[in-house]
Amino acid sequence: AQVTIFVFAARSAALRSRSTLRKAMASAMADKSVALTLGAQDLLSMFGVELGYSEKQLEQNAFQILLYQSFAVVVIVLWSLFSDWQFSSVITLSSAVQVLAYMMLWIQIRKTSSVAGISKNMLLLQVFSVVARLSSTCFYNGYLPTDRSGQHLYQALDLLCLGLVMSLLWAVSFAHKHTYDAQSDSCHMWWMPLAAAAIAFLVHPSLNNSTIGDMYWTTALWLESFSMVPQIWMMSRKRLHGSLSHHFVAATFVARVLVAAFWFHVYPELKLRTQSWNYPGYGVVAAYGLQMLVVSDFMYFYLCKASNGSAYTMGGSEPIVL
Image 1: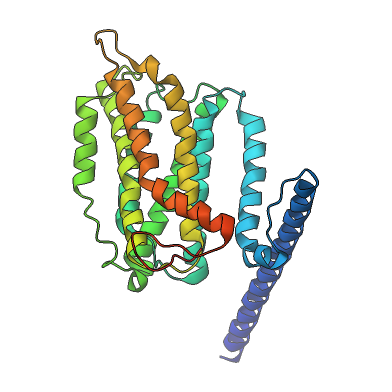
Image 2: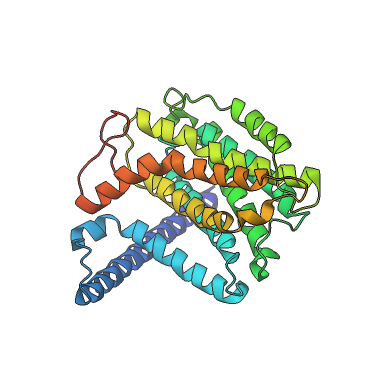
């Protein structure tokens, strides 16, 4: 019995030591990240670009800064290895930014042991969307980037995104269910998958040369267009604490802008020879336009907050804390 107690105590001490070491390493990396950001800000000021962030403000957001800097390094490495510098690679970059967005939410849950401010309905729609898109991109190549990133990296990023979303859904539904605010997450979403499938059935491109494959991709597109509606609805109904939820929406907006820029450029090529009007192309443009419209109101106030440091509200709700 004494040996068992000694082993248990030694193991507990080792775990505490590891936890302390990890926290110390994270703190040191955050300090270096802040120092690097201050140096970059000073460099920009030499060229007349004044960002105006104080050292205190940067220290308060050190973790987010470190996350962004790490993401930038990973993207640069992957871009140099897998991209052939073709315009279609922005689709892969968009998927990478979306992974960053969900990673922010995942880290927020691990850090706070709370899912407050996260919409379960949004996560469900995103699961349906990613599964539908993978059903197209894993078996057909019509909607893949034409460079090397479209061979495996693009699908791998979608799989990683699906894993993160499923982990978030588990946290909301089971692990931290007691912190989930079902009352605020009251946007009805079950009509959205049906609407997405109906639109995809009626109007879809034909790049896969397969009706099923094309419908999978178009369904995923419209589900993405609807998926942020429950999250924005929830954020407009209650005060949210912490900044990662808002960084998530901002990163998602950037991801949608990137992929929309590609499809806005190539949509004329979606016109079917048998049709006088480019219905598939206009449908894709409408879907991506809707995606950006859904979060544009939030992004406007988000940028206002970032520029002047003042609180703001959405839809008459209490000020949202970034």
